[in-house]
Image (cartoon, rainbow, N blue to C red):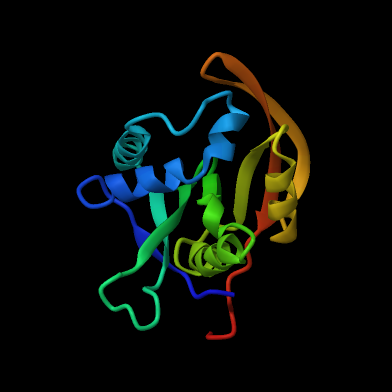
Amino acid sequence: MPYVSLIALDTENHVDALQRVYELTPTFWDLYGLLGAPEGQGERDLKAIDEEAGRYGMGILLPNEPGNADAGAQLVGLIDFRLHWPEQGVCYVGMLMVAEPFQRQGIGTEAWLTLEPWLANEAKMHTARLGVEQFNPDALKFFESLGFQLTGQSQRVRSGKRLVRLLYMEKSLQPDTSAT
């Protein structure tokens, strides 16, 4: 499994890199009936993250290629989440996306396993919650592999001109008490 790191994304430094991740994920946009990532989506998303209290956009980075120090780290994905939403102690994950050329390599799993201890120990979250689109069985399987379970709750939400059914999933977050 490749080593990943997470970095806080911002509009000043990461708009183009996030847009490139979106462009490398056409299957996601196709789920919504779009021919690709909408122009300017990276900037709109980072501005929305900046404007919403308790919301974070963490970029998933792969290190530079061995022997190619000029390449630098590469942004290959995004985890978008809110703390204390919809209630105190709950982290709502809005998106965990890995660009298609990097999928099925353990990157999304490693990114979540990097974030999860921070959520439990530092941010003091006791539950992670998310909604998976009913028409996205790969995402459902992925989150089940991370220990998320369906809650039995669902909701229809508007996405552009479509109504989308979200299936809600949750996972209990356990703080590491071995250091105490």
